[in-house]
Length: 101
Length: 465
Image (cartoon, rainbow over all chains, first blue to last red; front, side, top):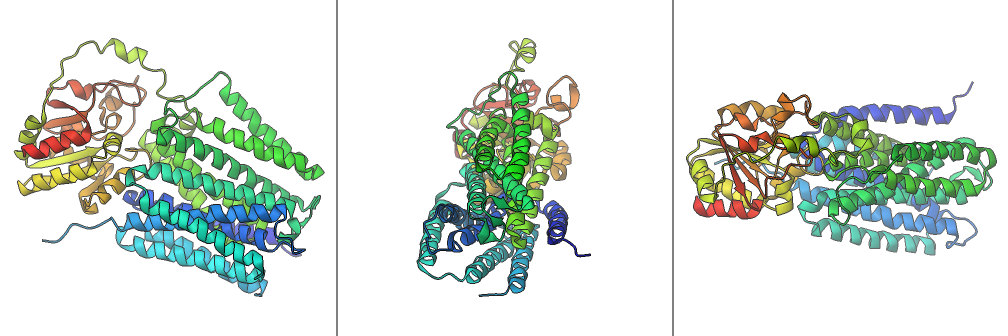
């Protein structure tokens, strides 16, 4: 009997939910806004799907409808990746401790 | 080219790096390193994908150009955006993730052989379910986030839009979606696929319009969660571990934040989501209001009170963000500290329009994060504090939440501002807060009302210190 690969992916999915649960509970409440912006940035890893959709189109016709949707998704995801990580960086740089005097 | 197994290992590595990115946020010191892990994870995922596709023709050039275009737009926004606009920015970004998920799903549907999902008209059933779920959740995230963005930006009124049979309509649309996914699997008919997307767009709008402005922290967190589930759905379609791990992380992160926000208001998730709150409940509370006496103060009085206090707690709320008063506030606190006054900040979980909103604004104004405390950490200190300076907050200080079981906010955890020796309330008018209920605190002996714009009043006080 072979196990369907879907089950493996599903296991990863369920375990990741649990990891997410414990990791996010340990995020300090004062960093909840950066948490939202960084999760936003990492969920844009959907760009990998967009890249495949845009580039892997066979028959040399890169302006096939399916490819165009891929290119559109690349722009959207790229805005999010750069915007998300940079704005997070900008916010995190502002969190400072009391100066020792 | 790169073998499928090696590719999977790289995706796993970037998934792990994303976990570490979130883990870093457990304290401000480790957070910057965490963000770096996130960036590396993303770079790995993008890099290996490009190598695995192995297509370096003109399409590759377009890819680079489009990424640069998108990246510069993103970078421009990230550097220009004022910190007070962070809630709308996050809502806007969520909408992009949602739309990107829809586009990827469409392209997988049109060109399934690229993703090894079968051929058009003969796509694997499991893939069809996954991609239609991904597309549907993505579409809901897209339009829902746009509505949230418009409400937060003030382009659309923050008050709830409700109509008769609203919830039944949404329920019906939800059931229709399930039916359509079923028929899509049965017939592979592309009309069903497009209908699923259109109905989901509509549903996203309908789900968010009944939710009022001050419930936005829950809405943003919820949309954050949706964008994660959409990504996970697409991840299953593309059999991509990085996407599945990330989707699950983001999905549970958003869900936890929604939970924390709901708990901060002592309301159930469904109560918030069904919306319509704060729209109609003015009538009952207004009867008892009549003309109760209010002590009206000015900047001079406030400065005198705080200068002579030994400890002051600042309670910021959404009004501080609206007035952009955080910098003035920090200056005021600096002046007070010079006078030997001990000053701390108390943050209610739902203060502002998104989780952690106040903390970011204070951090922007150079307030050290170890002077800023969460509700449970600081609530006992109000009893020993001389002055509570409430700037732009209202409902989160209302003692009625503890005393009146009839009140809509009964049971909501509040900051015990009333226990401090005197309370200074900076507010533009006596109007009730978002919940539409009168704040008993305004009429107390030890409360001094400062009627003014939060920033102007704070600046006035600095002059008088």
